Image (cartoon, rainbow, N blue to C red):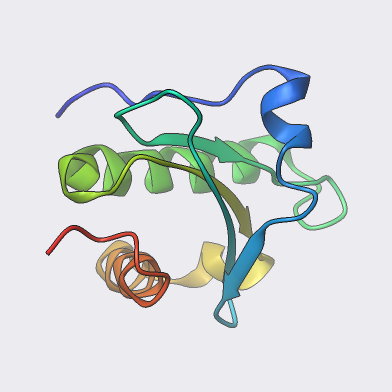
Length: 112
């Protein structure tokens, strides 16, 4: 599995204010086209209001990172921001994987 390129700076996250959004009942993503990049970058926002325990927030981020690192070579060069919901914690990994990849395909980021 390749290492993910993550969004880290405040400027990276502020670019998402006027971005396209796609969602399911358990996951929402926002997409911005990358500037001068040829690889996808990923960011995760899991607020304390959604999941109060840090261990639960980290579990969700770890699972999403694992799913994305397996298939990141199949994505177009965009910046993706993930907003997981509480119901994502109760899903099995395989269900989470199919939901995440279906959402990404629906957003049109998947290379054909």
